[in-house]
Length: 138
Image (tube, rainbow, N blue to C red; front, side, top):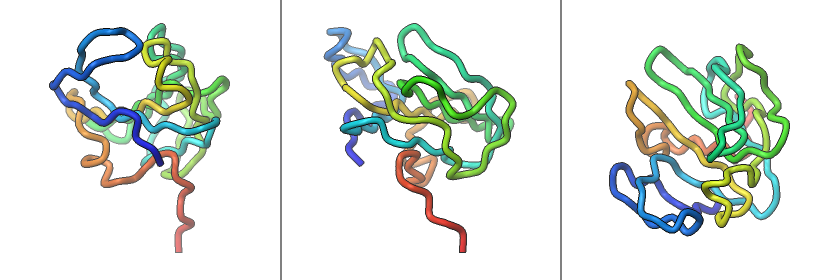
C-alpha cells in the first residue's frame, strides 16, 4: 500500500492538480494499476454515482452515524445502491476518475465520516485498509 496523500483534517495541503491549498479530508491510496477495493466494514450501499470532481463514487452507510466514501474508482463499481455488503466484499477497483486529483494517478480516495464530520480513516477504521485482500474468517 502506498499513501499518496494523507488525511490532513482542517490543515490545508497543496494540490498539484488544482494548484492551490485545501484541506484533504481523506487518504489517497495509490496503486500502479487498477487494484481491488473492498468494503472496510459491514453496511449498506447508500449511493453509487459519478462526482464531477472526485469521479466514480460509492457511499456506504455502516450505522446511523458512520459512513465510508470510496472515490476515484475505475469504471463500473461492483455494487449497486441499497446492496448489503460485508467487510471485505469487493466494491470496485482503484482508478483515475477524480478530475480534482488527476496528477495522483491510479488511486482510491478513501473518506470516513462520523457524526457528520470527516475523520482520519487510519485512526477510525483501525487500519482496515480497503485495498488489502481481506483475511478469511477463522
